[in-house]
Image 1 (tube, rainbow, N blue to C red):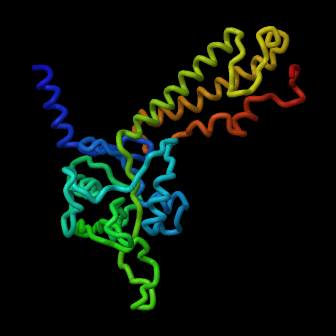
Image 2 (image 1 turned 180 degrees about the vertical axis):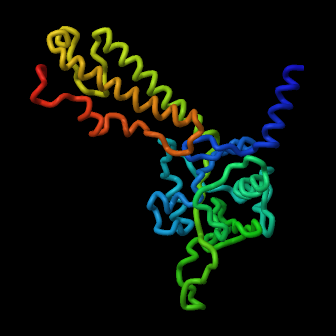
Length: 280
């Protein structure tokens, strides 16, 4: 009975809220277990392209090397339907990964919204149609079809590039719940920082990477060095605690990641001026 009720609740959640704002600037598709960037034109935001447009070759290369929140493994959406049939061609291609994202979210109460969304856009898929063409989805009418992999190159018949009324953009997708992965990694960093802070308070010199630190005996004779590592550990805790608090509040902004820990501003703030140091 309990299992039946749990299954019913899960099905209702998927029906009423198939997409959720999972934080870190991500949208999570519960039904298909996919994570999308909330920024529908992240290539422009990240400075990869002035307007976000790029060829299919450039899109495949950029997405393959993309690291968002420290997570790699991003890809272009598929042109195939959920059951593996296709590629779907024509109007109302709403069973593809991107078609499902855009169509299922329409008209749902409390549905999440994308940022930098351009209604007159064409988005690449990873599915090739031929040596020179790949499948792409046009948002207007959810029309999917073939598009030259380099739609900006001159056409020998026309003597120039084929004019397009829509922007040719890229919307990366990732399998699984990426936000959950980011939270787990930052929770691990937080636990490590707490352990390091606890060791330091007991008089044990913590380890920071491959950096050599004073022994216990040296720490006793050099209180400034001992307190220096204590402040560094405390600074780490402050940064990680802030990041976790932002995700728990449902913020979609990217929180300070591991790269922000031990940044020059943090290091200088945690070390006393040279004139006041008594230890090494």
